[in-house]
Image (tube, rainbow, N blue to C red):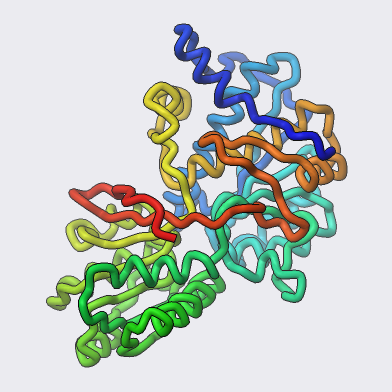
Length: 385
């Protein structure tokens, strides 16, 4: 199906709000014939990312089900804890559950790779809001998720240069120390950061890898190397739970330079974990801020889900709406829905055009936004790459 299909759900919600209508979930029990799923970290150290993301899916479902009272769609939650091993546990059963027509997720790159064998075999369509590792859409890589995997964010070969640029912005003579968490996401992003730093003429004082599964890690050895290298910029490639502990120890050691990190750290959980040490952190992400869609729809999001729009809410909302638009058109088998996703085009919440290329990337994607932790809040600084 090549005809352009707009996602009208968000606009319908705004119209309902303007006319005084309220969007609410059904108060009575519903028996669902079809389900979509969300897969991401709903427990564990990085659960805040998953809780923020699933709220975007729930909001999209609430709007859809209000508009389709006789053909409602349910939600199943797939908790992979943001890890490959976790995904290996939950993916087989999810793939076998024939009531699930598609998944919003997986959220993380490592979990995506571990899930692919099961979802490919089952022909289960995936749209990730936040998995950015380049190899996920590279047909030459064993990590390739085609033909079932699709994603909305830009890849790390775009984020890495943007993160490097943002990290050294305003620094007259940048001396950078880079650290990654050994995850498939962290090592991939780190490689692009280092290449970009060289191109930008920044000095790399040193590099280190740490065990990202240990959120209580003693970073004293790495911090000593940072100080010995006289680094005035530190770039961490990994996830927020460990990044919080790292920056806390870094600041307690007396380091006063810049701390920067990518979208794995772009989460309020980073601030919760790091406290005052998070202040001034520079973060990047291929994510649009949901609140920019307007006060009315943002307030309704909170009313319906119980939470203000958080990390990657926009991308989860758009991903869920793409899947739901396909179901509304009668694509109620995995094969039909996959064909719909592979060939359709849509308009997202922010008016952006969405269409997937043959490898699952979003055609035309490429923006990276910069964010600054200010006064205990992540503030958008606009597009940086």
